[in-house]
Length: 366
Figure 1 (cartoon, rainbow, N blue to C red):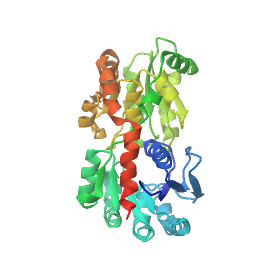
Figure 2 (cartoon, helix red, strand yellow; figure 1 turned 180 degrees about the vertical axis):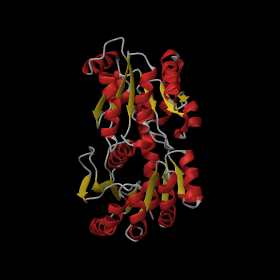
Figure 3 (cartoon, rainbow, N blue to C red; figure 1 turned 30 degrees about the horizontal axis):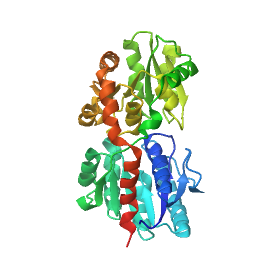
Figure 4 (cartoon, one colour; figure 1 turned 120 degrees about the vertical axis):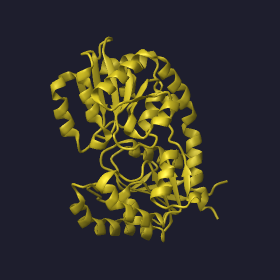
């Protein structure tokens, strides 16, 4: 039997998105399997009651607009985080954001076993070039990298120089039974948003940041009839700009803000879109939409083309015209939703929890 261990999840999350949902699932499964979990840093989402929290002010998120402030804060953030880790003495230290990975991996490896989760490796362009050297140096201190897809695993090997025996691919998972709506749940969700029966609802679950491509969906509305509306769940730095872009469409674009539970959005919708222009791993939002029985559309430059076909999703040109055509097709060709629902059953939560525990915890056993 696995000996219970203490896992510190170090996180400086701002806007809530798929990576933050991953942490909710991770903490819940580790607690369910008998381990102790402490969240260190800043996290806005709900967590199981058994998770202890130690608040450390982190931020802003690293980026081209915030690099000066980030550099000024880096030394303080690292010292505060290390002080906490020294006090709580975890067996395993989990990191999944570039800031924490680069700042902490080296010194933290002297306090516990460092495990990364990678949802995608480095950003494209100048930001990725700037971070590449520091990221590769930090990776030398990692005991294990959990990649959420084969593509991400390959990118870790190439970009970070991590030996193959330290990279383990564990595909994301969802609670497939809890998300699937019944007829009454769908009626209630539609009523909540006051959607008439003739409305065609496109939903998007995403952080509101430029790489996530939500602006593409807003632009695509100009190519779709008036009965199409866009339901966007999420928050982020680009919120104001996106709301300004959506203003000409009036009530055809609805922003819910951050939601811990997105089932009502999924249940009220007819089709799900993932319009990302950033390379993705295997987004939880995509799996959740599939589990809810929705046909799904993924942009071709999201790095998911092969996986999307396997999952029954439609791969779309990212232009407004291309997205509009793909969204129409998704609603007309019902076999996509059926194929997706069957495919997502392979991504259930219990098996994921046990595989993740094996990666995070069992490697710690002597």
